Amino acid sequence: MQSTADSQESKGIARMRDFLKQIVFGGNDGIVTTFAIVAGFAGAQAEGTAQIGGIAVLVFGLANLFADAVSMGLGEFLSLRSRHAMYRTRRGSISADLQNEGQRATIAIEQFLTDRGVPDARARDIGSGLSEHPEVQAELAMMFEHGMTDPDGESPWKSGLVTFVAFVMFGALPLLPYLLGQSGKGTLGWSVATTLIALVALGLLRWRVTEDAAPQAIGETVLVGALCAGVAYGVGWLVGG
Image 1 (cartoon, rainbow, N blue to C red):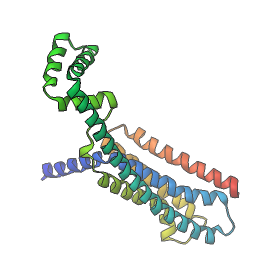
Image 2 (cartoon, rainbow, N blue to C red; image 1 turned 120 degrees about the vertical axis):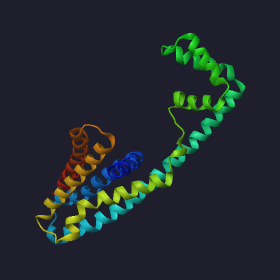
Image 3 (tube, one colour; image 1 turned 90 degrees about the vertical axis):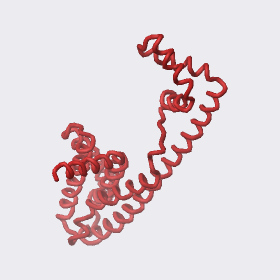
Image 4 (cartoon, rainbow, N blue to C red; image 1 turned 180 degrees about the vertical axis):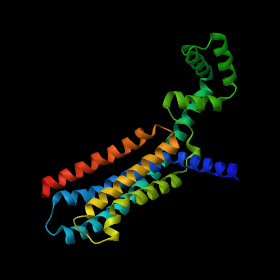
């Protein structure tokens, strides 16, 4: 039973690792941009903050939350679609060049290996072996010349959906006090607390998946969020204070 649970946990972590970029990017942006609405209104200190200000925070916050979530999700989708298209175009061009200048490509691979300490004889053996597999040569050229790997394992629509969900889930937390209770002087404090919890949770997720040092993973996430919130509060204070 324990081994089964460990296996399922490992699979879950592996799935999160596949989409870590989308979760962290979408979640962090959701928290920061939504709390910026809260901080901006608080900094402005408009008259009737307890009534009109609270309603405005909800209206602008929810509108911003879902509009930006859709934008982020579609942006991730289009970005990966473009990456797929670019990879196919460059890969096709390299494959065509290999058909015409295969010997030159083999010499380039041998030189690449010898420059990194591989003995000449071994480099020639490897280059000769790869010359019989032009598709492998093309893939290596994509990695070494263009820094691109085969994106076929990346699903644009899944990445876009994960980005959208992460944005909404984490971005809704700063608005939670306004959704659950009446607006008042203490609501901002509760919003700050839920925002901090959201940032810490995102940092813990990053630490759990990447196995980076926990203080670094959490500290960087919280610091970025605090910096953006401070800027939003400062702008609101300057404009409406």
